[in-house]
Length: 478
Ligand code: SF4
Image (cartoon, rainbow, N blue to C red; front, side, top):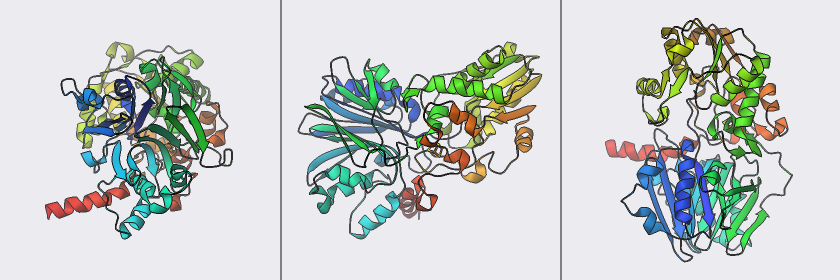
């Protein structure tokens, strides 16, 4: 069970009489990508309305408040945001609505702009005032710059100033624009509803929720416009000049099993990883159990390849949120116990293979292993469907600091001893990459390999923007 905070989810739609309701359902299906805040911006063709709130989609737009009714317009974008310790406040919720010399614009962002801090310093030096600690806000300041608004394609021009990971949705009063960074780090897909409206989403599970059909990905470096003329496309970098760096952790953990991302189904990739894991690290045992939900597909693959029966040793409660929402480790541990209960009959007196999608800090894994022992498991062999996570991510995913990553400074034996398992093995990086369809160099693997496609020297932490927020808190407290 991974203890990393995922990135965000975005959804947009144009020309549908139920655009706002469909955005609501789309965001619901993307809820696994972020639970801290949710928001929808919609336009009637002249004016953009926006509502954001803290918490999950169903809470922010709960029945009886009349918010969806007030937003009811034929084009909309929406956003769900992940939880962080210092930036959890309404000013950082998205879509981010602003007004500049060319009118209104709302922005929804999935990713992390690694040069946002530098750009913000530059703009602040010229007197710009920022109202959030959000890296997305800098995009609006770039759009508003007088020398940018007069360019033939101001948006394409602005995107060329951004560095890092971004899948972006822009709602202008008359159109939706969807853009993806030149490396295609985060996913972004294009679909079509039954009544012919076009939509875009982080994952295709959002299309399933509204019975829309998946058409294709928004390509790296592409801007797709949804407006009264249908769909049109342009590129702000020359196609084919940059090798993609799709985040492989999307396949391992973030994305929903039913989704198609980077051109293939997530469940199928995870099953192949499980099979590969069984080939690389077989062990005699009685039962294969997953750590649900993200370890389930890999456990099915492991069981299929090894011939060892699959069973549900853990049962997940779906009535509590993701565990990282709690501020302290002890509370997170308690939440994990609530979330995963053991079926003792499955593991008692058995040699158990536990398949997990990933191990990051290892603290919750250790707790689950102890629970399995208490439930009577005779042997416990942990098999992990991604390589040891040793490095932080700077492209939109909030990892623990390097020192807190279990594998960053430990040998395999030390990890085994720490987790108190009989054996622990990880899939190899090469083996994992073979389980997806694209060439190996089309994926980002930096959190495992340490090879950052966008040089680390340029990188700033996503939360460096929050120094501004921290200063504000300090001043209030002093
Ligand atoms: S460092 Fe890891 S989590 Fe971050 S983009 Fe790369 S593969 Fe994804």
